[in-house]
Image 1 (spheres, helix red, strand yellow):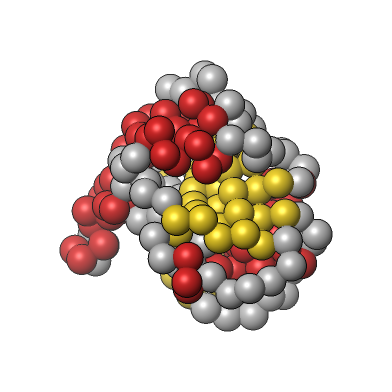
Image 2: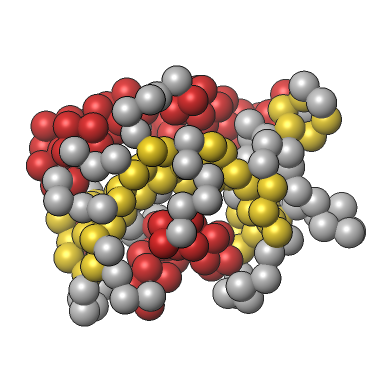
Length: 203
């Protein structure tokens, strides 16, 4: 497939791009600085501005899937969604956050005691993005939340999927590597199983 990855040079975006390329897809990396994108077969780098709806739509046109891997505090969900719709792409996958996952009935992680203050603004904006997507009827969207600790690691291909609840391992830790998260996202690109849904991935 032809997949556009917005924010392809970030921690998650880099791994997502590599995973998609390894599976034989054609990837367009939409970034602020194309010079940071390595030269690889089936990979094209394009300079794009997430706040420029018309310009971004032109870059997205002709793709089968758009993946958004940008910080919520450095983008506007309305503009991103508008660009995808204007480009005529129905499938939109968003790299989500863990903050909006429930840790108890009715209690989201970002509202729980001890949530790090430095991540609160970004986490809350992720929740706003998810709420906006849930009201979206024109796109076949998916919002993929990582676990609480979203970190560099290994590609094991072994993980669990969940819905709206934070996943924790037997030791109580909630984590997923960027590499395994990319596997779960690429699986969703190839075999959509969570259309107009949020799901989460963790060990």
